[in-house]
Amino acid sequence: MHQTGQIYRPPSEASVQRLEVTIGCSHNKCSFCTMYRKTPFRVAPIEDVEMDLKELHDRGEKITRIYLTNGDPFVLGTDRLVKIAELVHQYLPEVEVLTCYASIQNLKAKSLEDLKLLKSVGYDELYVGLETAYAPAVKLINKGFTVEEAYENIRKLKEAGMKYSALLMLGIGGKGHSKESVEATAALLNKYPPYRVSPLSTAVLRGSELEELCNKGEYVQLTERELIEEEKMLLRALKINDCIFFGSHPYNLITTISGVLPQDREEIIKHLDSEMAAWDRDQPGFLDTVWKRTDM
Image (tube, rainbow, N blue to C red; front, side, top):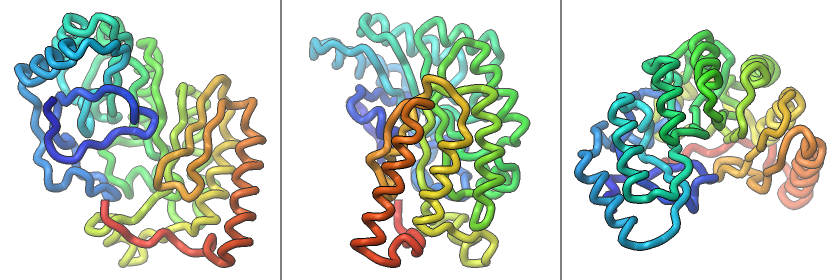
């Protein structure tokens, strides 16, 4: 199986079979991210994709879901994505879902008809790196889209019949802006409900533009306590039915967070409060510190 460089995937896809179709990230300019800075973006040769599918077929394992790598495979043109789906179904006929990371930019480049076609050949449950719908933060992180474009293209995705998982960054609005950040993001999600919400705590990585902004005082990190309080605020602001809340990203201090909204909302909040109390008891003062800068 081909695997070029570091592979990143959502925690919820840890046990799912991966298939390399791109290398690196086509945008690679987000201020908070250093994952692909040393990996030039390129498209995996279709011959390599088919070779990997033949290998999976020969293993004889039952595979019902494929996770396409790397940073944003949905950047590929519709024809290319359809060709990949055809190869997957040729060699692995039991596959039901093809999923991957997808950016708002990727969605913007595809028409409603494109998305409906891709849905019909198996693409679904895309991981959309929304991060936030708070306009100042969207500008800060340099994701390459506006809030208006996020609304329009998630609407288009929903109209095509696709489910999506909303990837969010707790604390990206900066210190003192949790309320307006949560309100703006929840407004979008409540209008166009995802099937899963996956929040992760913002970490300032060495070598990132966000670190430079931090050093200049243009971005101020939240403490661990403030991040958890923002997560609780988000839970209360979401008015979505049958939505998985998956807060188990390793960047989160409290990783044992998972449930279905709205029925598990209060239980999740209770668990967060309990964990915070334990940290305050066992390591007084720790929750009032910020995440130390680290490497990806």
